[in-house]
Amino acid sequence: MPTESTFLLAGLFLLLAAAGWALGRFGERDEEDTAPPLNIDYLKGLNFLLNEQTDQALEHFLAMVRVDDKTIETHFALGSLFRRRGEVDRAIRIHQNIIARPDLAAEQRDQALFSLAKDYLHAGLLDRAEKLFVRLSQGSRYQVQALENLCGIYEQEKDWEKAIDAGQELEMLGGRSLALQIAHYYCELAEAAAAANDFAGARRHVKKAQSGRPRTLRGALTRAHIARQSDDHKTALRLYQKIIDEHTYLIAEALPEIVATYEREGSTTGLDRALSSMLKKNPDMSALVAHTAIVNDIGGIPIIDQCVEQYILEEPTLAEFVDLQQMSADGADSRAEALVKVRSALSKLARATPRYQCQECGFSSQRLLWQCPSCRNWETQRPASRVQFETVLQHNITSH
Ligand SMILES: [Zn+2]
Image 1 (cartoon, rainbow, N blue to C red):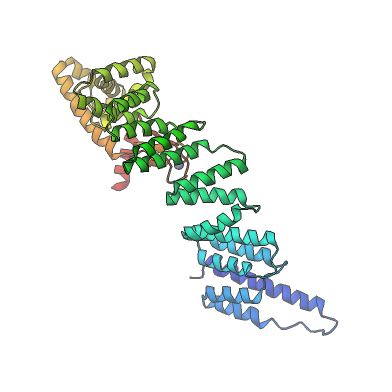
Image 2: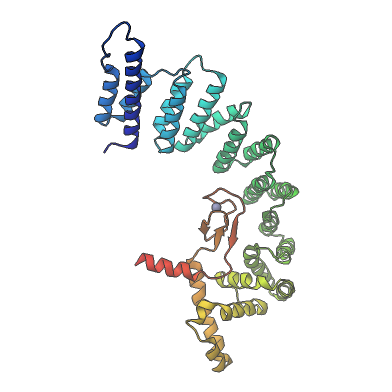
């Protein structure tokens, strides 16, 4: 099957043939009054295409149409079109061909290098792309774009030190704040240091993460995790508790940790008190507390159990299946028993559906991802505060 690229190259050969014919017809008619024969080169190129030999046709085109001031834009257009279509090898061939021209103007060389770097990026050749972007970041009109791409490459390579440098340089050049992004880079360094038992290093990095404005909420959570990992339970508890007091969405992450720490101490009264006081001031956090408890199987703490019960009673979809009013009329024991059953069913459903969703692009996942893998934005995921019945139903319908 001829591809779009085949048609594109065929179009180019025909255009060239037509241009050549027009030039010959009108430019040289004084010398000879007959139309010149169609150039054999064009026919050769078309022949490759008819035989679906796209690469040979491309090589033929590159040999036939030298890069000069008149044709360079056609070469660039062809290169970016191949890249957009995913035919990166061909795009690379075209851009390398442009760069090989010895008398290329500096601006055109930069444009070709930038295009080639993007080709490499598309092909997943990160080290080659990095080299070119570094060169362009050191003084060209692509400086800002090169640094943006470098940040993306270092994020993929998890080279956070280099990402910080590129981010800071970009901040100075681009005139926009990257504080949040850079704070996440520091948090990544802190987590890596903590995983290697370098707790002093981890604390140093997280301190830098928290010095930027706007602050990332992740800094507080990372600090608490570091304290827990270094067995400083008292500090961990204080820091997790602070997250509860701040009543942000990170309660979904902090609550299981805080419950585990309290349970280790044998008493959860402190947690009960802290949660009650937070919920008195922020009653709308009750659903998130309940959902977190359902997903993580947290029970036996009176204030959390109350949140779960309220959540079950107020869930409109559940009301269609379970007659909770009737259950209440049947007595306290049967009500408690029914609630346990509903809760356990909800827990299974909640675990089968994504817990976090990106507010920018909608990408969802079970675990909190600080950088969205789809739109690459930082800290755009938020936890669900109710079981996504629609998703479960949709999933069952589409899988049958
Ligand atoms: Zn996203």
